[in-house]
Each structure stands twice: as C-alpha cells, then as structure tokens.
Image (tube, rainbow, N blue to C red; front, side, top):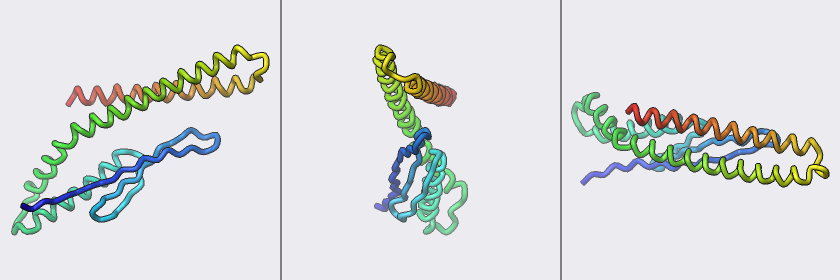
Length: 159
C-alpha cells in the first residue's frame, strides 16, 4: 500500500507594540519539505497548503504515463471537498472563542471602570478617558468579530 502524507504546522503569534493595537500573524510550515511562509491572512496559508498538496498529487501521478489534468484536478477537488467543511467548523469555533474572550475582557473593563468611578475623586480625568477609549476599542473589535462570524455563518448556509 502506498501512502502519501502531507503535513503542516500552523503557528499564530500575537504581537503588541506600545500604543498600537495587538495584531496577529501566522507562520505555516510544510513538514515534509521544511518550507515555511509567513501570513497575515488565513487565505494565504490555505494557498500555501494548496500549492504543496498540488505538488504531492502531481508526484503521485508521476508514474502514470499520461496523467490527465482532469484526473489531477478531480483528486485535488476531492481532497479539498473532504477538508473544507472541517475548516469552516474550526474557524467558527475559534471565532466564537475569541468573541467570548472579548466579552469577558469587556466585562472586566466595565467592572474596573465602575470601581474607578467610585473612586473618581482620586482618579484623574486622563485615566478615565484612557479606560473609556480601551472599552470603546474592545467594543469595536467584538462588533467586528461578530460581523465576521455572521458573514461566515451566512456563507455556510448558502453552501
């Protein structure tokens, strides 16, 4: 029995700079070749995986005298057809987790603000403005993530 294996390792890194909002980036590695690529959009990681899968599929047909493009395409489509539904579930679960964490952070900040308001006489207006700014940014991030989840759910329903 012949067996082809294509493995990838994904690493997500959260970077935060002074005064700048945190941003995520990723690194993907094709285990068999040791090739790596940085990505800022998950679609770039998918393209990296597709390139390596296509190469593996081409190599699998290399022994055939005339592997037709249709046959190679059919194999690629079959593979992605099996994987795509799982990818969507994983992405939705990840987004739900991020939304929940954002909600908790918002609640924590609201509690801190409420405690800070109680001692407002000793707290400067600059600190209150900073806290309000943080809460507003968190609220905007949670709303943006909610919109993305709604969009993905809509795409799933359309498929």
